[in-house]
Length: 303
Image (cartoon, rainbow, N blue to C red; front, top):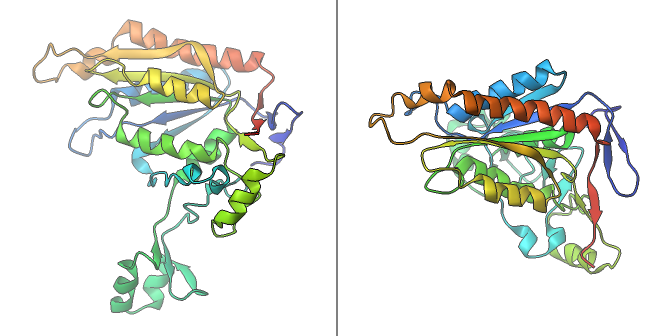
């Protein structure tokens, strides 16, 4: 957390944002101009337009493109015991994925990045460790998402609908929000000791942090199947205490009128109704954030 931006808040909150308004846009489309689709997601086009409008109104923005990140799935340790899920607010990491770089365990004491291991080891030893799941740990980029969301006042999700469900990149990332919605910091670094987690959870004074509580959220969806994603995504955000922006949904349904789909993108990018919804999200989000106290986070108890 940047010093001077966040400060301790009163009892009902955890942080108060004292810096410039920050809005984060998350693009979860897998389509790419340089890959099989030969074009980027239309939802990404809308999201960039939305963020530009927010910048015009004085907000700082950040675009997170999930295509560019390596994010592992949630390991669901919370279901064993609530305190088994831990989150470090200095490193912006959950302890299921403690490495920000690909890491080699040459010995228990000698732990190095993959680049250093390449220089230190013979080719044979390098690949022997690389293929050993117990001695090679892949990097996890979710810390970049965590950092952006903790610093944000508002979050805009840009998605599609795949087989009437969430896109894979979105679902993988969203499952990792568990660490922000209750992850315990006090037990970080104990090697996932289950007995420590049980003792923590049995303490009647034990509390958990809803770190996204109070932040504004909005949704952009482009699909041929209709927007089956936003209602459930909205439900998840509300469960975490986020505030859904009034009229905070921009959607575009690309009907199967063109059998080749070649005109879909052009029509979508020039649809005045959807473009007006996208700009409304930016304007309304900046407006609502300015009116709010900008206090985020909530302590909760399972007692």
